[in-house]
Image (cartoon, rainbow, N blue to C red; front, side, top):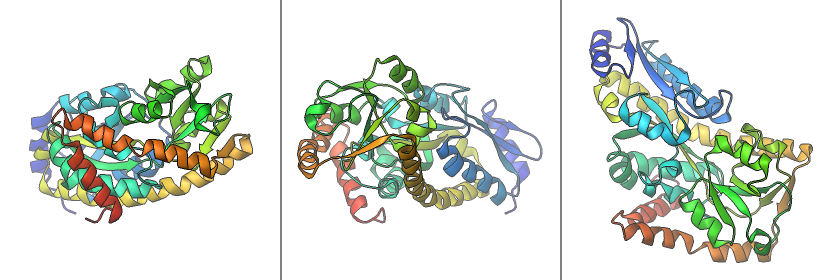
Amino acid sequence: MKINLVRAAAVLALSLPVSTMSAQALELKVADSFPGDHYLVRLMLKPWMDDVTKRTNGAVTFTHYPNQQIGKATDMLRLTQSGVIDIGYIGPSYVSDKMPLSEVAQLPDAFQTSCQGTLAYWKSAREGVLASREYAPNKIKLLMAVVLPPYQVWTAKAKVETIKDMQGLKLRTTGGAQDLTVRTLGAVPVRMAAPDAYESLSRGTMDGLLFPMDSVAAYGLDKLVKYATEGVSFGSFIVAYSINQSVWDKLPDDVKKAMNEASEAITPKACADVDKEQQVTQQKMKEQGIAFVPLSDATRAEMKDKLKGVAQEWAAGLDSRGKQASAALKEFEGLLATGGAK
């Protein structure tokens, strides 16, 4: 693909100091809170950046700032909006006051695989209710996303086999919908960003975590936990790399085309890779001595019965604030039913 470098230079000059531009190249700043070797960097972000650079014949490159080098996970939306970075990893749960509707993809018992949740969220956040009601008002544009496989309860001391076992447990959550899920089952949510979980669990200020399997390994939490549930979805989490809308608007059309094509290519591949990786990680954890506790049919049925009202309660609460959560929920459920192709 041939890139109009003169036009790109003019574009970047307008966005300084967000990006730096020479006569030959467009460089964009990307930041997140993940360790540099995090599985989502390896499976999604790096392949996407490499693909964009390839599609633009080297005219567009990226500087990646991992591991909270520029700001904490909770700061990424603000840093992207303000132009400190061009592209940021935004976890909607960390900014639920600004992006409450996105938590539609984090409700319990909604889907069983990463790809089911990812493809539905992607469609809504790029073209549907979430695009118009969540991303546009925040002046960002979604570039790529993965909705993680269903969260499980991970504990350091006592296994969870029944709802009674969850009573009073202090469990790390990402906030928002996960708080509602945990409270519904009688546990106590402790809202916390992923990078802070290790210290709290090691100190014993929490009893356990709501976490996806590969993130447990990525943050070293597999050294602390001893048990994990199986058989129930306790919700999920959205990893959404998004670009400052003003920066996007100033990009040359051929650069936008390259980014869109790279995004369309990586999104279904990344979620499929995440689903596959989970199986490998589980086997490694079993070999480390972590026990995966399958919940009985009766317990699963009891939990699902309690959790089935969470989505409606979540939607009703936001609707009362004028947030159109019921519309987002209806669209998301429809997209899940059609594999994201609605």
